[in-house]
Image 1 (tube, rainbow, N blue to C red):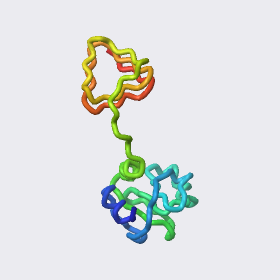
Image 2: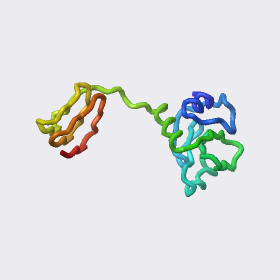
Image 3: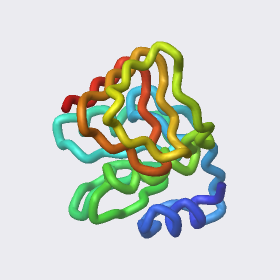
Image 4: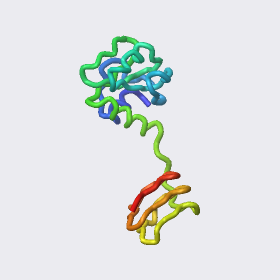
Length: 143
């Protein structure tokens, strides 16, 4: 995806770098590689910015990249913008309704028909599971 498209979809603006830069994935500053976008939201990780191999970085207002060789995407909330990017590069899998045989569900529970309930889930008395919900393995929902 082009940097310009990423900026638009994450509600960020390009402050530095080519709008035609190809961004292929997202990763943390310390593990990012060429073609990745990363972020800096906490000043205690600023030292990673100097060493990252990311091609682009989301920065909060007022934060300085300190480098000319990295594209900068400016955002009101760099962490939120990065989360949006993560959803673009790593979308959630499509929901496949089922209830695993190891799930323990009280008979009073109301469950919508399009729900995923994975292994070893426990759902207590009087709960209601809404449409489109995915409950991952070993989750307990109390009464």
